[in-house]
Image (cartoon, rainbow, N blue to C red; front, side, top):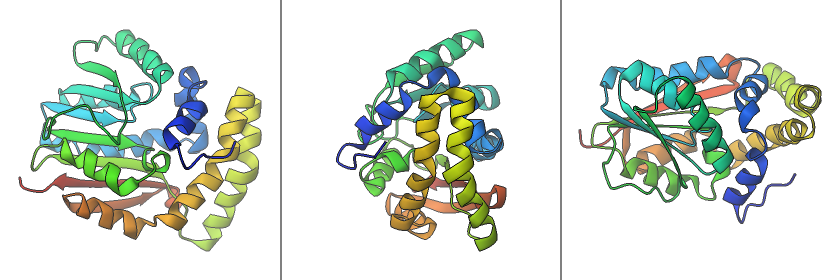
Length: 243
């Protein structure tokens, strides 16, 4: 599958629509079991603020939204582009008895259907590789956060060490597609084949240093970066200026 850079939203829908009931397992496979660790590290940057409301952008099947609800006591809104992910997320929310605290809505990160400063905090996961203009998307994300409110994200990353980067390349180009096929069939194979080249391409265009600058230009301050799992994962955080 080749990414259509003229319509990345459409591409993301095509890629993820068949996967919602297997997404959590797929995320663990793609991250070599590190997805849950990265997620917790991201949410760690939201918890101390004790927010009353949190927006989780690109929420998928609501895994992060549910953890935010459990760990912060906040009312959480999860937003995702893909209806199938939201349907699976709705089932997960109901199964955990969190329908009173977690609400899921369909929408685009590039055009959030919320007022300025509508949320006390915000998270987003695996987002910027699927939008046409990452910097504009970051400005839109920052817009809906109240001054002083924390923002945190997580994403895949290319290991900086040449040694580990070689192993990462072999895993993403060879083992990942095969493992996806064995464990999930054609759709997982498609995602596995796509992921490595997509991550590499993204960081050639938008290296971490550029991304930090884009956060700051979007109005976020005290921006921090943590490379995790030998550089295979990236957790970032900051807060909306003015608080």
